Image (cartoon, helix red, strand yellow):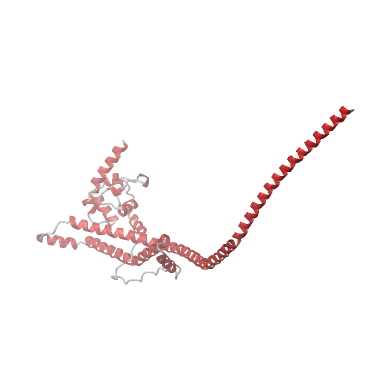
Length: 333
């Protein structure tokens, strides 16, 4: 009995000691935990104090930013107005560019016609100068034959035709000059609007672009240089009139050709683009046909296409065409 009581007492003592040790351990752990929580709370209190001290400075900064925002909004309003004005100007400039494009399309045929007439006039002038350069200087003793030749009705008719043609070209060129000038002005204005440029110049062009629409005024009519002057023919009318004389050509001798067999007759010296069209209009398309010309054919073709008297023979179309036809045949072989 004593032994059991002693064991029970020892066990009880051990249990009490264990409980005390456990409680001590728990107490120490809780104390350490509380100390860490207090330390963290103190840190947060300090951080909160720091944040609280920064609040006035932040409020002041917010007020400054609000004032800046108000200032930006005040500056933005005039910029919006300027932007709207620029957008309106841009829309007006685009509309004006479209109008200028239409004006250019209207004026472009006059420009092309002017250039075509200028080219034909220059070709005619060059032909006259070339003919004069090739013509031998008249000798005193040859004055009578020259005067007689000048009195020849055919020569006089050809000279009168040349003079009338030159006068016609000059009149048409003068009549088209205002259109060409207006075309150049429209083109320059159109290019300037597309290119832009510096600010003052761009604004000036835009202001001018939205002004009254440009109207191409017809050229003022000019008095006829002479009562006998006739209205200038168009190229189509000239070719149609020449084509009507095609039956005068001896195709049994020079041969018949079609447009499908056409050679580039402009290679022959003395045949320009318009002369080639005249030859084609009467059925002459190939080197072979020209190479077959006799003197009679040369005179007849010269007369039908209304060329300078004797020009076909002087430029030796026949021999040139024969060489070109030979080269063409050699290439085919």
